[in-house]
Length: 194
Image (cartoon, rainbow, N blue to C red; front, side, top):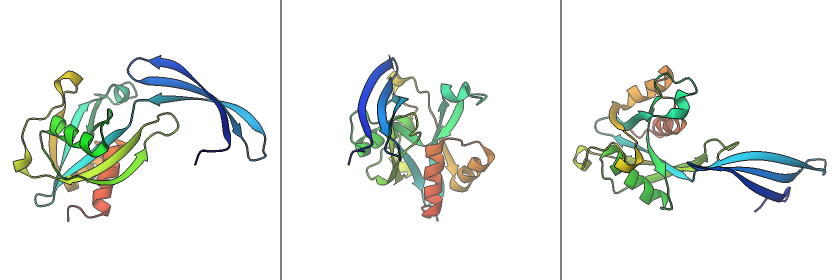
């Protein structure tokens, strides 16, 4: 159901370079019944999917590491981020997208994925909703080196860590990526690796 307290929405494109930055001007009805004009900017980069690959027998998880410019300019000294495998939907169904991303980024070909939740990561400024998945992996599922799609300049390093070490990396600050923290905590809460 649409919000009846919002009306007269106007959209202005501020930038359409990498993704789209829109400025929205609208009227918002306050609790006292009066209306005020509000302006907000929203970055639209499309929706995405993220996945935690885990191996129960080995007690390990597969993560990735790559350079992230926005973190670098905001104080992350080397700009490198340890993350779960993730990608933009680009029109695909979330399950299809994440299977493709897993093979491109990690080199594993997986058939079964389980959607566990979805969330907005930065609802004050970004339109993106992320679909979160978990999936078991085994060494025999490795069909390539991973590293990302050649045309996407990703340069991804594939990492395999003991699950307990990955959880500890949250505490030490080696893992600062929200989607990764959420999926690792989901795995701990639901005892995926016990």
